[in-house]
Length: 256
Ligand code: G3H
Image (cartoon, rainbow, N blue to C red; front, side, top):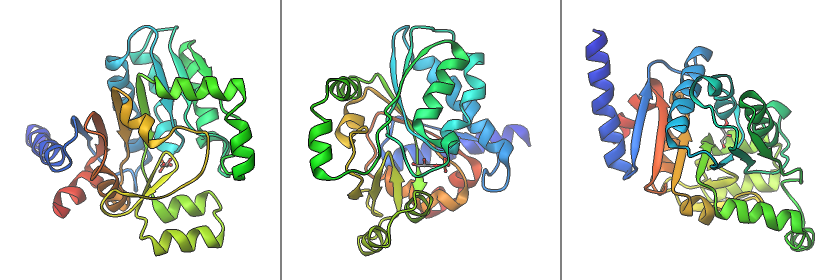
């Protein structure tokens, strides 16, 4: 049965990889919607994959969310490189501190005695404030790190769930509904075809910078996220390594 299960996963991994034209798919057993330990397994697998991708001085841009946060406890088992730098890919959000990119990178760095760079700026700002911010030397430096990130590590969320979590305004929610936003990743909202339909204007990582990164690791599980994941993966960069759970994978395969 055990062998059957892994053979089954192998087939699903290939199906999902081919459908979305991405580099690799890895499935862990279980369903993170129902079981926290599955999320921890996702974190463990992601830590292992990350460890295999890194050179001594890699810069890793990291987004927020509970899935990405679940990687932290497993880092030390797979990574022993103190010259790494974890970059917060997003600014401060209207979310719980422990799932924000800034907190996560500090935590990752502390666990393996590596370095981190944070971005303590509000996520949403006026055009005027934005134009001023991007002229600041410290922000310019962060932008250049995003442009040269060796790895981008990000989660994927359901569009409206994420909008609610971020306490988006009614106007913003109406806009997302009108534009049929389904998935969310690194502050961009995507429709079912994977086209960006809305983004938070921020100095955080930009879609073009993610696309440029040689390695992109996306981690998301739970059958409730399958539509969001499918939407995002439709146009995900081809270098994406996608780590998911059985719950999401089965639903994705059924949608194929
Ligand atoms: O961008 C997507 C979200 O950060 C995913 O959050 O891992 O807590 O579901 P989550």
